[in-house]
Length: 303
Ligand code: A3P
Image 1 (cartoon, rainbow, N blue to C red):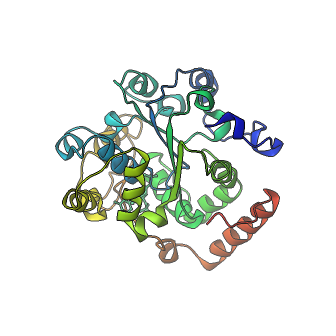
Image 2: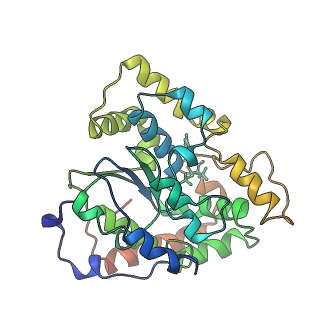
């Protein structure tokens, strides 16, 4: 990002705590000191904000809409999750996988601004940040933890953890607001899950423009069909099915087998939280949001 334009705002740039596994302490320096390349493509989100959907869109736009390859090769291979091995046990080394890609490298991360590599600010690769309404994130995160992390508590317990900044990559509002404050930099494109749901073609247009790509209407329609919820739900390459099976075979030996409905691509709704979250929890998130907007001095609502 353009360092001259970085706001000199103590609150933004003072390193803040970020909830991650203890393992990440040994990994953090590796990421901080990594070599960043100008043609890297970074996709950054707080978890459950539509990362996978945006990754698939971005990868295809940057790779001449190579649908064949996208279906053949898992997204986690095409678009590695930088710090995954730094936060949990994996049968591969996610950092090495990200590093060894030939250019342009595609890098997914959930890290907050202050944990990004130092060279991000000088090399200025293109970065996409996707945000999503906290109520949807909370519900989606709860289901994610049940699917992949053996979470056995209730939705209510989980939402309380989220509101108290105790879930991985928290604090949530700081995560979103810090990237939000970088809007306007040439190498950052920010949009929301809700924007993608409202008008996917418009977002595809913005991403094409960001990467100087252009495709015929017919090809764009094909891309929209590929990215539709129903198509993504059936797509093995984006549902991390093998990763889920690995977890069930190793770490989660004693777990219930996932039901058909327990897929990574789950409901994909904007207001899905309304079906699952009690009014009390929804109200608690509203109050938390108001408090955070005030604390962070945000005049324009983040969502
Ligand atoms: P839900 O759990 O609310 O269904 P991430 O990739 O950041 O983990 O985000 C996952 C969320 O994005 C899930 O939300 C998932 O269903 C949703 N998602 C993935 N692909 C989608 C698509 N093509 N259309 C709509 N939502 C999608």
